[in-house]
Length: 191
Image 1 (cartoon, rainbow, N blue to C red):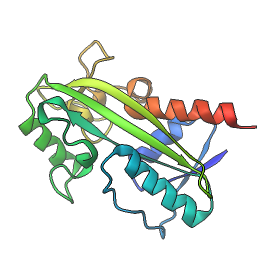
Image 2: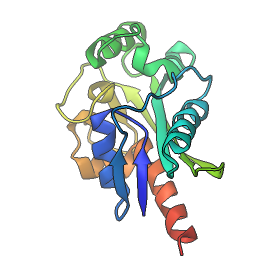
Image 3: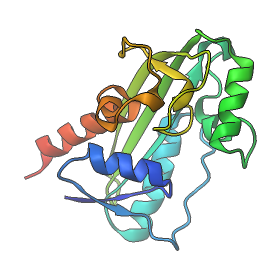
Image 4: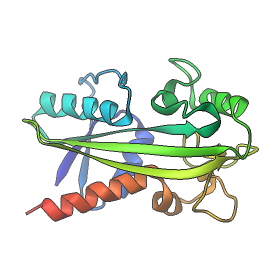
């Protein structure tokens, strides 16, 4: 099976290639414009990108939207995670803003929704979450985004998401859980 992944984020492409074992992932063509991520939910944003890609290419497309929810901030930044510190903010700027506004040890949750869309309208979504807390200090060189300050609840030794190996991260991450649900569905429904 071949799927077009509706993203230009190289980190997400590499993760999805690892997570969707046996599925050929094609990158989004450079000339295809994706709609803005202006939905109120992760599902709305993921579906918008996958629908636009499937319609433009006439091919099955998948897209994800993901982010972090801080309990101390009433669930923010949520769908605004990539732009938390401003429209052109870097990962480091977004992370610094989260660390400035939420206290260490407070609850965090990563959320990911992957949308699967067929040309002509067949579609499904798959969700995954990862619970954790905010680290007192950012640590680690792996991962991206908020990973250096995210202490996953499923890892007992106090390492941040950015300190885990790819295999360890994939086993507990929000994107890993959503991708495994998609992969299980693909395998169950493929001839």
